[in-house]
Amino acid sequence: MNIPDHIRHQAHNLRNTIELHNYQYYALDAPVIPDAEYDRLFRELQELEQRYPQLITPDSPTQRIGAAPLKEFPKIVHRTPMLSLNNAFEAAEVDAFDRRVRQTLGVDSVEYMVEPKFDGLAVSLRYENGIFTTGATRGDGYIGEDVTLNLRTVKSIPLHLHGGLSSGSPPALLEVRGEVLMLKADFEKLNQQQREKNEREFINPRNAAAGSLRQLDPGMTANRRLTFLAYGIGADPDGNVPHDKQSRIMDYLASLRFPVARERSVVNGVAALMEYHREIEGMRECLPYDIDGTVYKVNDLAQQEKLGFVSRAPRFAVAHKFPAQEAITEVLGINVQVGRTGTLTPVARLKPVFVGGVTVTNATLHNEDEIRRKDVMIGDSVIVRRAGDVIPEVVAVQKEKRSGHVKSFVMPGHCPVCGAKAVRLPGEAVTRCTGG
Ligand code: IVH
Image (cartoon, rainbow, N blue to C red; front, side):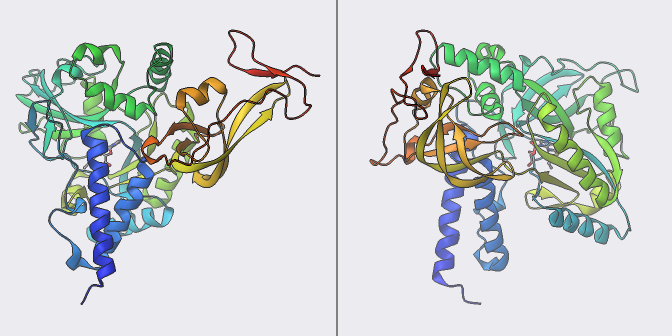
């Protein structure tokens, strides 16, 4: 079949764009688009390549696992590659996943081990004779960066294995995989400190965790409180780990004192997967760390083996993502709202954008200082965040996209409601109406 030129171009452009974002995200820890936008581009390319398989090149981002590791850290070759998960965004996609699993296995119903999808950074921890020897980031999936010294500062990572060992002596080699995260409370504290020092704030806990783990000075990492949650095994050549169920592996890891999600569970069938997803979404805001979905894994390890892998992801697992909480849009204007107590709050009027499961047209800018610190101007392209029931807010400006047509905002000297003088008292961040 002949592929039209414009389709070839489209695939070529998508590859270049995705590669650039891979580099920004994985190598520089400085993403310039939200994860959801990246996911959308990736899917677009995947769909194009599915429709025209002749378009697939060996160097397409869909044909590999991640991006090049940073130069500054020593490299570590993973004993087994650190793969990715396929995403499902809708119930129909979860249905299709379960159907494929059942068809391949030739069974009517499947048992799944389910847990939250932690929104952090994947790491692999190597224990030799029970001692934590090396820890690596995912890198491109095959070769990661050696961040051992930084991981040693993460207090929830055991420096040696204790308890739970059937033979009494520790295994010669064990690789544990999981996610490094920053707790929401630690993220808030860190940003508070950044504000006090007049330094750049982090966009979200994931970016803060990534920036902290990639510090070349471990002392810096130690000051940035990080945490770890285990979700699997990388290598177990001695066969110490349970061989039958994913859920028993998790219990085993817990018995070795690795932090694992308390919210993990074992369920049967696709309806139970959907129910679990709803339940976790309901408790999302109360969890101490960010999650971006749930992960479903076929529980039986023999069944997992039978299902195997396709290029970058296992066929026996899927990530069921929540609607993204961050999105890009444009500031059309900045209005001032007057609260019941007479506080003037600047609010960004936005080009409507779907974020956090709803269409958002306004986002708070809090006060004048916030606008200055974030350097928000009318006409800017911005990252907007809406988490749970919290009022949507502008988290950052995409400065690299700024054109010459932006306009700065000036707080009015008078209350837009009653016309009385508006003042800002010394030491206060808010502007108040002096009338009424
Ligand atoms: S299992 C074959 N379980 O999501 C890969 N991954 O998109 C098996 N992640 O690189 C991964 N929470 O860093 C697994 N409960 C969880 C997870 C989880 C977060 C990350 C992981 C992986 C990425 C895949």
